[in-house]
Image (cartoon, rainbow, N blue to C red; front, side, top):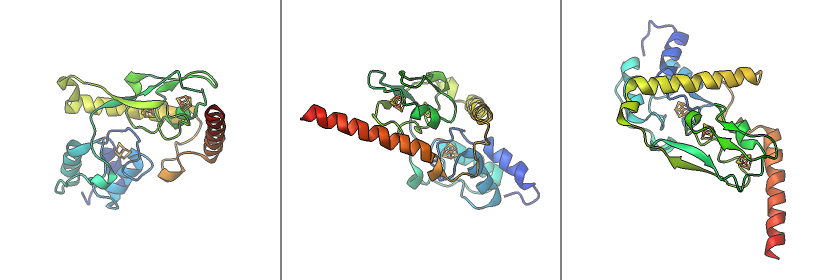
Length: 208
Ligand code: SF4
Ligand code: SF4
Ligand code: SF4
């Protein structure tokens, strides 16, 4: 760590190196809280699976420390992918929209929902809340020149801008200090459980 650097400035520089998917695999509620933890010395630089070795190398250079191997207890670095909704099965509960940190899903209550593939960061946060398991991740291939340091940085900045805009639209701070386990709000859990019970009743009827 650079002892002379102001903590919040350093945290901003760390945040600027992170992929901005807000996936929470690092164990923090998003990229910025993880950046704050790195800047304060509370977290190691190797907890971001989406960033992988490249982000670890960038963080090591910034923090003037040795690169570490990715902490695979947080996950593994995967190939780029986007979410795809099987629209035939979608019941329009909107739980995926509420879970998506970058507003990459469109749809209205009780209508089918669709992912805007160009805006999807592949964070997978929409998958657990879906009560009918109709969202899957599909691989996308990117031309090599789209994975340069500059394009990765531009992609991250774009995702961050959408995340911040979503926070503003919802009239909340996106609770950057919110623990990861509280991401699905109690209201969502209730709705999720009610839909799951209804589906279970429907399945039982079909199987009779
Ligand atoms: S991309 Fe995911 S794992 Fe990496 S810092 Fe951001 S929230 Fe954490
Ligand atoms: S659509 Fe799903 S995988 Fe894509 S950014 Fe939104 S929550 Fe993440
Ligand atoms: S969570 Fe699943 S069922 Fe609900 S709107 Fe999204 S894709 Fe459709």
